[in-house]
Image 1 (cartoon, rainbow, N blue to C red):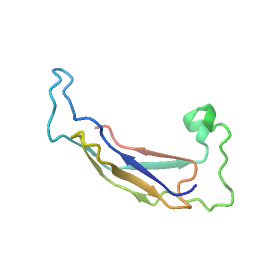
Image 2: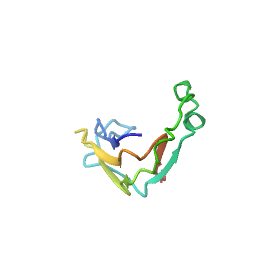
Image 3: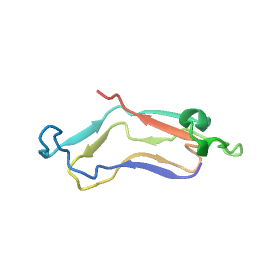
Image 4: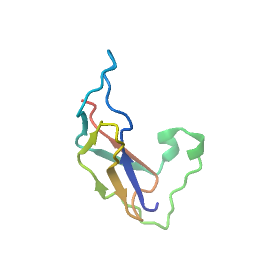
Length: 103
């Protein structure tokens, strides 16, 4: 637990795979952000670094309250950060998962 932010950015211009041509003014729209949270981090990640995670029982942990419903990300290569989520001090303990329908 503690304050944190999740931001995304694109470092490169979108490029066509068949001919390497850059695609100007491209934008990635991530719609209808889905969110989930779990204190059972190891089961989610199956990574040794998470095997001893214990939620702090003294904190009345809450879901992250500031989540962008839709995220619009410019693929212009300028690396501008876009905020997806922002957790206050008593929010988002454990693993927080954000997802979007790939269509």
